[in-house]
Length: 492
Image 1: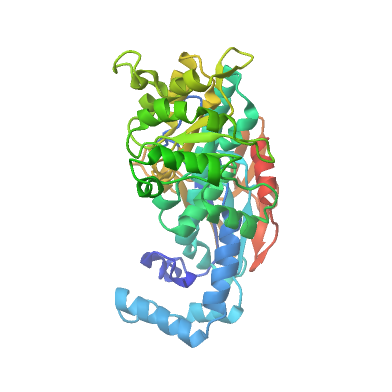
Image 2: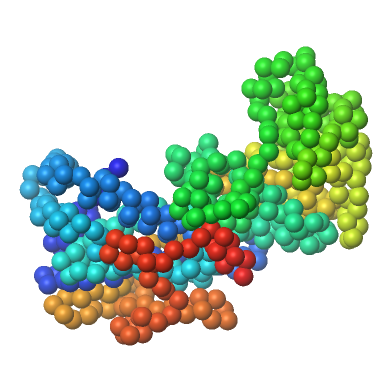
C-alpha cells in the first residue's frame, strides 16, 4: 500500500490552509480519557505505550521507501493527481509538494517518544512529531491518520492485557496460587476475530507484553521483526477444534479422546475441545473411564503431562463454577472445576485453597471479558478453589471490542512556527466536557512520584529535556527498543 494514500481526504489540502509562511507544525499523540474503557475497580487510569516502533519500521521506513520513494516519480504523481481529481475535483489539489518530497528522498520528520512499555497517565503525550525542514510543515499532520490508525490499537490491547494480569495476580495472591503460572493463564485466542492479519499481529503484541500464552503466530513474528525479540516470546500447546471431534463421530468421541491422550500426545500438554456434544458427559464420565490413561501419561522435558478440557459454549461463569439454579448435586450445579476435583483430586495451597491435580486442567475462551474473568475467579475462591485452576482464552470479544475512543487517543497540533515566530496553539471546545481540551505549545514530560506528568508552553530548551527521546529523525531510526526491554519496563 502506498502510504501517501493512507490519509483522510481532508488532509490533502491542509498545506494551503495553514497561514502563509508556516514553517513548522508540532503535534503530539495522547490518551485523553478512560471514560469509555470498561476497566476493573482499582484501575489507575494509565495506558501502556506500545507499537510506535512497529509503525516506524513497517510504515515510515518500510512502506514509504518501497511504495513511494523507490517508485518512479511520474507514476506516483499521476496516481495521486488522479485520486485527488476524481474525488475532490480537477485541480483541487496540486502535486508539486509531493514531487518535492519524492525528490528529497526521505521523510523530514522527527519523533520523540517515551520508552515503550511505559505506563502513562491520562492526558500525557506518549510521543510528539515535528517536521525538520520548513518546506514540509504540511507533513506532520498529513501523517496523523496513519499514525492514529496504526498505534492506538497496540497501546489499547497492551493496557487491557495488563489489566488481565493485574486481576490474575490479585486472585493468585488471595488464594495462594503459583504466580509463575500467570504468564500462561491468559492465552490469546483473538486472531480470527480481528480486522485482518496485520491488525491481529500488532494487537497480539499488546497481549504478549504481559503474557506468553498465544495462538497468534504472527504476533511472535512481529515481535521478532520489529523488536528484535528472542528467547521465550510466546508459547502454545497442541489443541483440537470441533471439526476434529466431529470427524471422529459422536459415537466414537471417547475413542478420539483416547487416541489423542495415548497415541498422538502421550506426554506434555494437550487441549481437547469437550462440548462438541455433551460437555457434562465428557467431564463426569469420560474422565472416569480415561482416568488411568491421563494419570499415566509421561511428563515432557518441562515436566508437564496435562490434559486440558475446553468447554466452548454456554455461560462461562456457570460452566466453570456451577449453576446455583441447576439440580442440586448435578454436574451443572457443581461446575467443571469441582467435577474434576471429585475425580482427580489435587493439593491445597498454603492459604488452604484447592488446586487441581497437575494432570488435568480447564481453559475457557468463549466471550471472556475482564468482568466475566473476575466473576469466575470470585466464585472459584468462594468455593474454595485457587485461581489458577482455570486458563482464560482471551479472544476478539475482548481485543476487538475496542476503539480509538476507549482511551481517547488523539494526535493534535499544539505549536507551530510562522515566518520565524513560534505560536502556542490549542483547542478547548466550549461544547465539550473537557476531554478534548488540548495542551498548548511545546511539551515536556517528566517522571514523578505520581507517574508521568506533562508540562506545556515550554521553551525550546525546556522541550529538549525530560523523558521524550528522539526515536526517529529524517528517515532513520534514532533509538531502538527490544521486546524484552518493553516487558522489563512494564514490570517496573
